[in-house]
Amino acid sequence: MTINSSQEPTQQEQLYSLIQMVILLTVGVIAIWLIGDLLMIVFAATLTAIILKGLATIVRKHTRLPHWLALTLVLILIISIISAVVLTSGPQINEQIIKLKHALGTQVGTFRDRLHNNPLGDMIMNYLPNSIGGSSNTHYSIGSRIAGSMTGFITSVFGVIGTIFVIFIAGLYFAVSPDLYGNGLLRLFPSRQRPKIRKLLMVGGHTLWSWTAGQSLDMLVVGICSFIGLSIIGVPLALALGFVAGMANFIPYIGAIIGAVPAVLIGFSQGNKEGIFVIVLYCIIQFLEGNVLSPLIQRHTVKMPPAITILSQTVFGTILGMPGLILASPLTAAILAIMDSSTPKLKPEEELPPVD
Image (cartoon, rainbow, N blue to C red; front, top):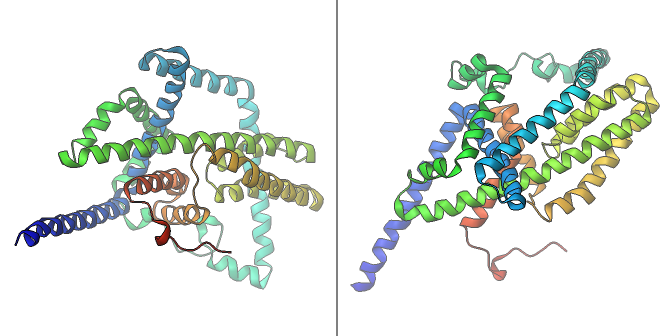
């Protein structure tokens, strides 16, 4: 009698936890499907807040200043750096990006004409959607399936610049009082679960900061190496192409391809030799980045399995478009860290044997 009565509450608790998990997953999937881009804006603001808070924490360690004053110094430094870049190199970068846009348009048009003149290429173009230069009228965007959603409203009202402004302002408010918003989120959970949720929030925040810091260093190195290499080869618009390569590297793996394509197209527009040199250059940069730089960075930050990274980019990119593709990696890093912290470790006898 005593054993059965003691086991029954445990079974009820397990059933309750299972039902709660299913409900949360269902609500999460529905929310991502309906207002995914809005959730991406919230996540981007949270990521911005974590970056600002992390930089302010570094300042506090060296100056012993209060949080608000350290955050103010960080903002002044960021604004000063952006202003200096805009005043010194802004016109040149803007001019090169405009020229790069026209040059890429010309090269893409030439490439499409070559494909249409080839039977196999013409067949490929007929299956590609218009959004990437193909001839098919098929649309895969979630926005076309859920017309009039809140996401579409935000995009149409604010536009890209307005959305970036909203993300920055919201992130700034989050960074000023992270405890205020974090405590408000904790109040949504039952009292007995709050210590665990608090721990998971701390783990997720630390992971996002580590991933962003490491990826920023990675972007800087790739951008500078691309600019120097393209300048040596003699490819025009090297500054703009290096800037594009560095920014695209925020997206692991796929970003390397996105950043290399414009440079390769411009390289081949100068001649076959230049195009081949550009391909070799980017292969060398990505080899060094993947085998030298990334291991050094991941030793102090976050290590993500390549297969999971690419699959997450595919899933979030398919559902949410470009915002999902851009933010898939930091979101996945935080999810993996939270799962690792909330689940028990495998015992040696439970692990799969390593591949010889």
